[in-house]
Amino acid sequence: MKTIISPSLLSANFLHLDKEIEMINESEADWLHMDVMDGVFVPNISFGFPILNAVGKVCKKPMDVHFMIVHPENYIQQTADSGAAIMNVHYEACIHLHRTLQAIRSAGMKAGVTLNPSTPVNVLEDIIGDIDIVQLMSVNPGFGGQKFIESTIKKVERLRQLINRENSKALIEVDGGVQADTAPRLVKAGVNILVSGSYVFKAADPKATIHSLKELETL
Ligand code: DX5
Ligand code: ZN
Image: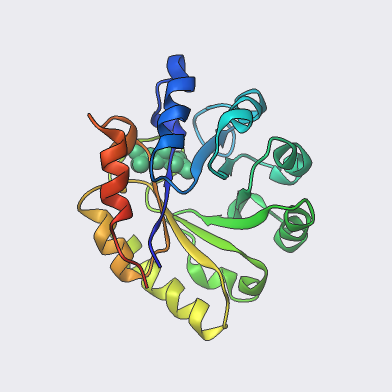
């Protein structure tokens, strides 16, 4: 199975979003990753539903929305209405994670759970069967262009073991610092989905950069 590539819109040129989405549509990107931040769960504010709704109308790739907000359970229907295919919520932001995941699936989306760098994978042991995607943060959430946290490689291996042991079909997604030298190592460790922001959108040739990531073979 080829690696799923989900470029992160956070590093795009917001003055020319139409051109950026056109590039994504023409590229080999599988999904489009979109980061919603509230200035409470993370120390930054990005964009919300006006952008999700506008992009949802023109983007031909499934939208993979990553909520870095408190109370993401309050926005499930609005997210589905924007046309999003995947809704990722942070484990650390959800008191009733099981209920939230059920509601995301009932709204017709794939349910993703995101873990901060300091949250161990074993907290998902009893819920892994209800998750479509586990997203591991390989930087502290809130900003693009940060340095990859090395211990993520071992964390991916531990998550792969947990998924296999529990016979789960969950896919592993990694977000933060994904570029030329980290991407092949992540895929080797068992990652299925690579999110990449600055490496793709700041590249001289973003489509060629997406192609190079797409070439990586996964398990
Ligand atoms: C960070 C976001 C990421 C970000 C990744 O909080 O969740 O999706 O855009 O950016 P890079 O790939 O530049 O680390
Ligand atoms: Zn993200």
